[in-house]
Image (tube, rainbow, N blue to C red; front, side, top):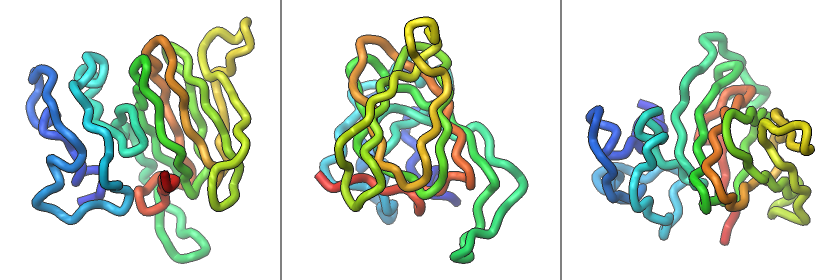
Length: 185
């Protein structure tokens, strides 16, 4: 069982359930906490309708996600870890929410579907640094970008927006929570 499977929220165990209150910690009490867990992770007050429709679960960085594809082709990394060549997720960032500073050990390509996301990139030092801002969205005529590459190891976060945003993220080599780090507060 992957760590993603181990953090499934109670509300995704039955279709048609309405909003429920839970925290990441609530459904991990009888299991070992995954490596990305931080004490005090914010509770999700309810599951947004789009998260329910797409069967998304809370993401440790903030927002909601579900892996929708993993390549059946694998690659062995220089350190011996084996990963799919790529993975794909839905990522929903509801209005007013943000994601925490985090980084991934692989390249991540963000693809806009609805709404807009302001993504800050904070360099690749030990801690996030001065942030470059990029607006990911579908209105390219106003300067939004519909695709954005975050290179491997670069700190990233999103900032709150006034509307919901739905994006996809492709990670290559494929995502694994063992390759994910949240910045210390």
